[in-house]
Image 1: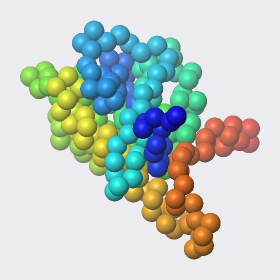
Image 2 (image 1 turned 180 degrees about the horizontal axis):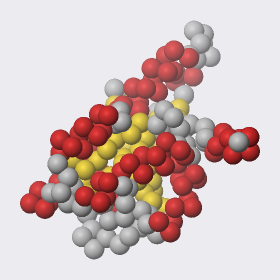
Image 3 (image 1 turned 90 degrees about the vertical axis):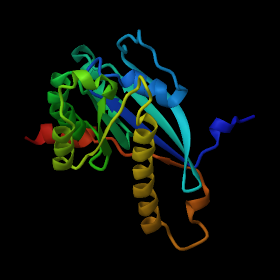
Length: 214
């Protein structure tokens, strides 16, 4: 027997990226299990969790992947990004270096992920306002310049965590449903009643071709 969690209209893969220690794992656990672990250890390799939400009467199942931010695990990138339709690019508002590294993470995302991936810049640990090192306006301006959505969150006290995931999943859903309306044939074979697993083709091959030809 299938469980209620198995029933969904869309399945979206969303990845969490950013430096180690910015709170990616706690954002994941807060959204999917409403848990926060103060003793959270650095993620080794990759883990993921799922949660379903309702958007426009449709059930959206989010498969959210969390990866190690440490340099030594960087070899997993292309497999990690494959099929992702959304990304939360996370930094710590109290550590300016994690914000400076956002540019490098963004480049990696552009190199490995699909061109149409929806990206949200997330300033986490907003509860540490007394230690703030990254002005909100500065991060907001960076997001606007790079066509990213932006939000500040706190996995510790739950501030905006729900909103961040709801917003990115809703944005992905709108893009995908608009594309389906444009692409769907006007006949009874239209797949609108079927479950749609939405993934994007990996871009690794095109990168390989570039390397071979140049």
